[in-house]
Length: 117
View 1: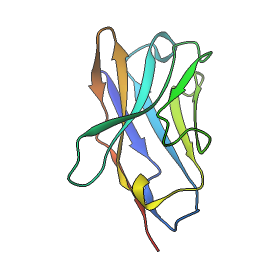
View 2: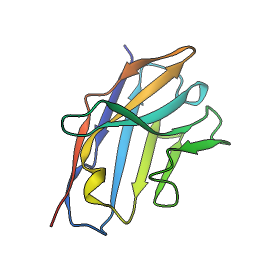
View 3: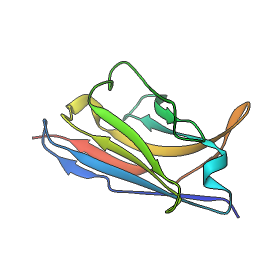
């Protein structure tokens, strides 16, 4: 059974940092691209970042470029999102999702990130 389990969310002050984790199971982690997607209160889903299956290529939405870093540890079957210099507009539920062309076919349950003073 494919599972993606996020953790690491919480409440942080503006300018602070958090590291999200996404633990994968039930599939060969290194064979898939995996993304972070977020949903802010009252808004739709927003793609945030993606890392390809061999970790050699990454992509970011413009609003987080230079502040967020995506990485993966194939030995631990875990995806990370290091988030620095957080802003209130980063407040959202963050999901990890597996990409299997042409869609994101499995999603985690999400982890809440709240940036507030």
